[in-house]
Length: 212
Image 1 (cartoon, rainbow, N blue to C red):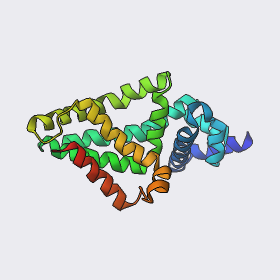
Image 2 (tube, rainbow, N blue to C red):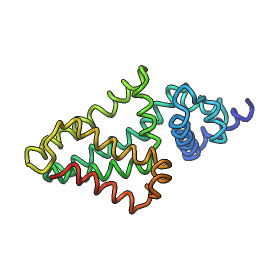
Image 3 (cartoon, rainbow, N blue to C red):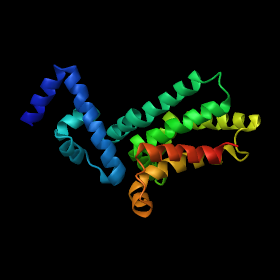
C-alpha cells in the first residue's frame, strides 16, 4: 500500500509520467482482453504485466469495466475518429476513391492492432452491455458512413452490385481475420501477413473483390 501511495503522489506531481503509465496500462489491457476475454482478465493481472500496482490501476480507471471502455476508446475510438476525418477530407472525391482509402486505412489498422478484431469478435458472441455500448459509441456511425459510400459507388457503377451491408462485413472480415489468424496463415501458406508486401497484397485483393 505504501508503494501505491508513493506512486500516486509522484504521478499527481507529474502529468507526463501519469499519462505514460496510463497508456502502458491500456496497452497491456488490450493484450489481456484480446487473449483472455473480459471475464478472463483481472485488474491485478494487468497491473502485474504493466509493472505497477492494483490500487494504481484502480486510481486511473476505477473498475475493470471502466478499464475495458477506456481501452476501447483509445483504440476503436481513435480509429473511428480517423475514419470520420478521412471521409470529410475526401468528400469532394468520387465514392470509389473514398472507399479505396477506407479499405487501406482499415487493413493497416487491423495489421497494427489485431487485438481489436479479437475483442470485438468475443464481445459480439456475448450478450452483455459492452457490445451495445461499443456499437452505439463507435460502430454505428462507422457502419453507416462506409455503407453509404458503398451505395454511392454502386450508383456510379464502380462498386460490385450486392447488399452494401454484406460487402461492408466482407471488407471487415477479410482484413480482420487475416491478421487475427496470422499464425495459422503463416504455417499453412508460409506468408508473413504483417510484412509490407503481404499487407499490400491484402489491400489489392480486397480491391479486386469490391470494385468493378
